[in-house]
Length: 195
Image (cartoon, rainbow, N blue to C red; front, side, top):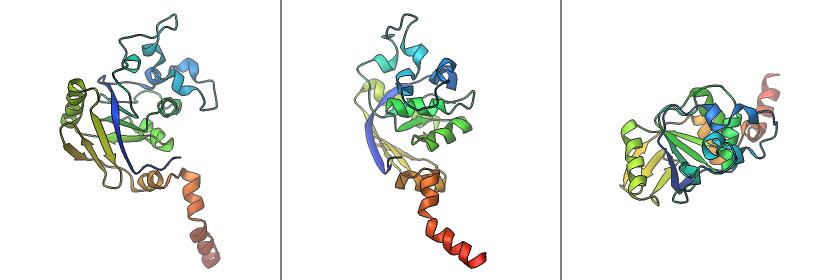
């Protein structure tokens, strides 16, 4: 994984609540075992019509919006536990998803795939949507060491929580195996001492 320290980016606003994993990546795309190409099918049934033509009203097809932060409504990632949803979000280029609530399995899958889920209060989330509606070029800054998200349009910021282990992994660009390898010396010393 790439290291994550701080990120400032414009955002893609998706003010829809209860977005489930089948909407993020439809079930018909789950046959693949490689992560390649999933970003092309992110929100496939919302992005494209039945003829494969882009739906102009969908936010990912709107040239006003872009960036590596997706801002979504409450209860993002509910439904089935498919890891492919996190693959699709990462494959599209999002590094962060901001919401006021994430389904637990989706949140864990996202972190395991280098996507940082940032939980904010409902009021702060509404403020982000208002900022982006006023100025589509408004940015957010995610400061992982300080665990702080800032709406640069208003200057307001809020603290967010993250598991200490996952925070260390993001800061160092580790997946679970990389983390274990980084502790190899400690593990070997423990084995020699106690076994």
